[in-house]
Image (cartoon, rainbow, N blue to C red; front, side, top):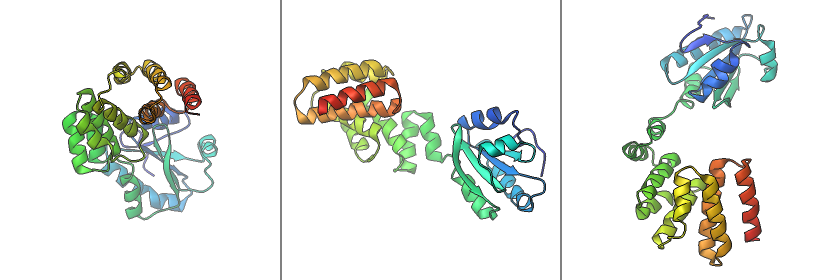
Length: 255
């Protein structure tokens, strides 16, 4: 096993695992190779892992962890057989496999972790990049959602609705589509809620939407406002105090 301490491939231990793997994976994927010097299959797999990581330098990193020298980490991640490979993304294990794999399967494993060109364009966030991302990948819900949000902020609800409606199963896209429908229906009362949402003030947005849904008895309008609130709940996360509070209040109104 090559002992490298810098760059795309490096050794890691209990002392620096949190910083070099867990925290680093919030910036780009980090693959961890759990191995030992006595393990023949580990030595067979290692070069394929290193080649795959080196070919994707700057987009993915490979951390090599000797389980004999770092038994606490091996126990923490439930390593019972080696080689064991775990890919970390956003601070958690995103995918994994156990046992030596042929190079084509290793390459496919790494390919699945590297952002596509469309994903990289989505991260740019500007209109031209978002439109190009959708050209490359029409199924990219994130690009569809963010371009729709941009169009709504620019007061172009018709195009936003056309863009957002195909994004089935995405609660945020559904909420943005509901906002587009309300605007096309001439909605004025919810303008402060929309502005608060755009400004990242979810508390004020939810308060205004809660007041509006409690005040209306029109089923269609009530459903559209509900979708807006669910979109904000989704962005906040299920356990966020604001999401819990307003989800409870929403359920009481709809019951």
